[in-house]
Length: 272
Picture 1 (spheres, rainbow, N blue to C red):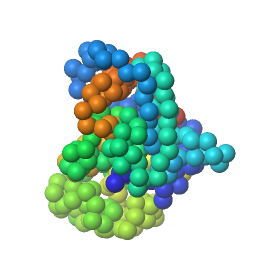
Picture 2: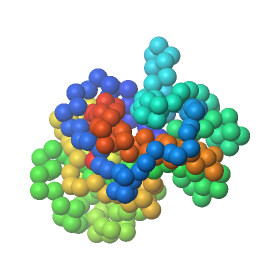
Picture 3: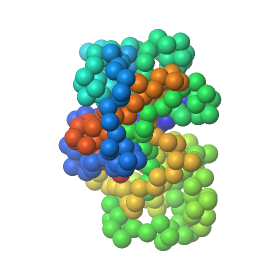
Picture 4: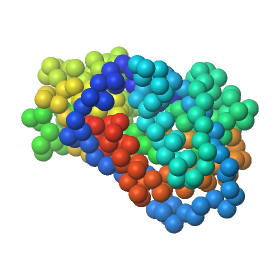
């Protein structure tokens, strides 16, 4: 299963926004990866598999063209490695099977790093982590402290990892569950709750249309054991030359600024 599911937030509006609040990506890879050398085994081409139903990562625009953050990233990886690149679109319920049947070399579509998937696939380093963050009304951002929320109502999506975070780390807040992130964020806007806590990426799309009222407050929380490892690229197990080439390209793209450029283009309200 992919995380996050973003359709309900109205992501298409981000392409029209001015990136006034965008930040560059933090460095997700191990610092030692900066010294990584190109793969000793040449890779003649990379056949990427993806889907067309996961905006803003991989989807078809109004003209039917395949676009998105993942699509741009796949192409930049191939340029960096200097190999031919193809991108094949599959239905979500078939794409992992296509990869395991060696109908492609790499899957860039948000496949989760579950134990079950780990038995079939290897994964690249993380190229986009998914932190949790608080959102408050604009007047409450300056000087925000999570410990000051004791006894205050905080919106969260029901039965989510972020609700578990609040229960584990801030047990004194009054967690108010909502069925969707958008409903919970609207509660912040209306003043029904003091803050919202949840997936920062989802919130960034909502904030894109609500910057006058609200914004991120406090730090970003990276808890892979709760929020997941983030977005990676999957490959059939044992395809070490492809995995090494992709990891090397991700390091180079971060170092030369290309990965930050893609992030700023597709996520104008930064979530770090």
